[in-house]
Length: 79
Image (cartoon, rainbow, N blue to C red; front, side, top):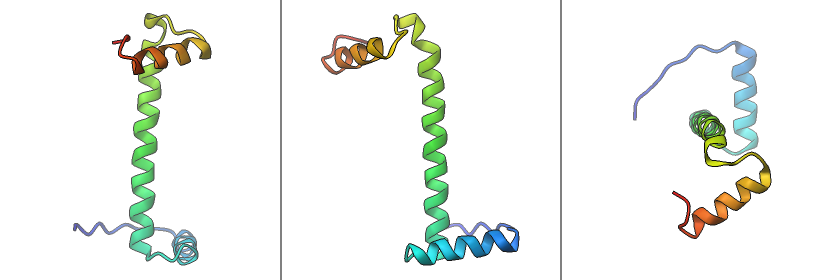
């Protein structure tokens, strides 16, 4: 494990401690979970941007087009 000291405003630290306690977590557990969630959210946002960029080239313009493409991909027809 690597220790990463950070500086937080007192009120934010209190909020973190209250929420961690509410969830029966330590401050460290809560912060690790928070960072993991943020990283996953960022990765999802990046993926959404990439899909939005590529969709028109694949003929995907509507939600119905997207559903069709996913179904075809799952059947192994779309590359």
